[in-house]
Length: 100
Image 1: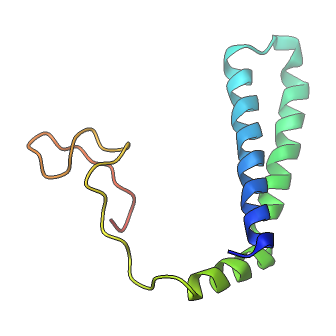
Image 2 (image 1 turned 180 degrees about the horizontal axis):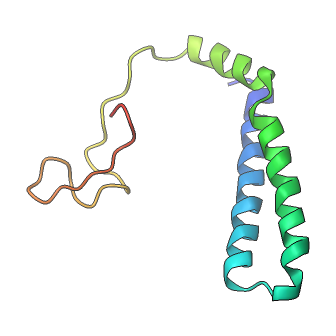
């Protein structure tokens, strides 16, 4: 993975973490008089995140990274955090991602 792509992915992760933290704070701790300011802050950070996410350079970098990688899909996991139990068991309630 090239350094620009790695840096962009870290930046997107950081922005997403800030969005999640601010959203959580808004729901559980934020004083009611601060709601308007927090909404504006969230809108700003979400707009920056969106701009970075839809940047054509990101798509191009991901395509280049994909060209050097494996072309077949990986096998589904035998257990995953989104599964209530191991796939194939009598009580499996797996909400695996699409395509698994």
